[in-house]
Image (cartoon, rainbow, N blue to C red; front, side, top):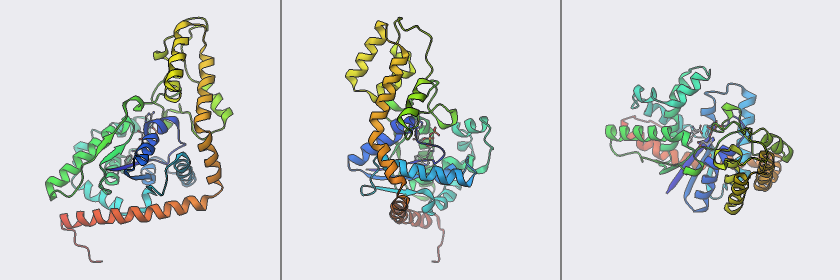
Length: 324
Ligand code: ADP
Ligand code: TRP
């Protein structure tokens, strides 16, 4: 089974990315599947148009993936821009993709509603994502719930291509773990860079405490009984604590006499414990940016080999004559 996924370098890694996506990347890697994980920097260009910002976010994401445990010995780890065949395939897929399919994309509508300029790249974003997935003959795509529609569109595009040119492309499936499909942010909405409600993974213990203290709760006084299932702090704590501890904390919520402040403090401790080793690794890798680049270079080489084989199948199927 081949697993593929990408994250845009468009901010700093947060708990939503970890639980919704990266944790599944690691699980599939552990299980010995063929894994392809990448930095979606051409996707990021649809919204980040500042050289320094994009470069910095790219280095952060590459370092973060490796620090969290993506192992280049077991997974092909690379940057999207090192595989030019992907943008080539995107063009071919554009030619079979109905405009009406793209007009249904909720992420495009959301982004434009938020004030991002409606450039063609933003509109075409799902087709580039389809190319990312299809070019490696991917079977499963581990992502959070917000990406479900993009994977559905990928399936539609692959099927349309196969109907037009013959059975050439593998039709993939989303791999979404329900309990973590939508990790809530500080305000209870989906945790997302664009809502400014994230808990970053790679920050100091002190900064983690501070940000946890900002999680929005209701105003039940300390003594009052509380409903754990209606609380953002508990929703996050449940992701990090052992089940027995989560159960015990839920009991304390219901009994009263346990304040949100205490729960926030415990949550910060759990986050700091969970990511202590990754943060150390991150600091080491940050000092060795040549190593990170070497890893990406090697991953790009492996990814291009697979991508070129698929692309040649595609060119042959469509009658695109190459003279190289
Ligand atoms: P953001 O929404 O912060 O811009 P991205 O779109 O870059 O995050 O997401 C990268 C990956 O992380 C995707 O697979 C996405 O589904 C997942 N993801 C992001 N935020 C969450 C969340 N709050 N809950 C679950 N998964 C998430
Ligand atoms: N759209 C994804 C996101 O915002 C990033 C992405 C780009 C991706 N290409 C992909 C995810 C291919 C999975 C597969 O998170």
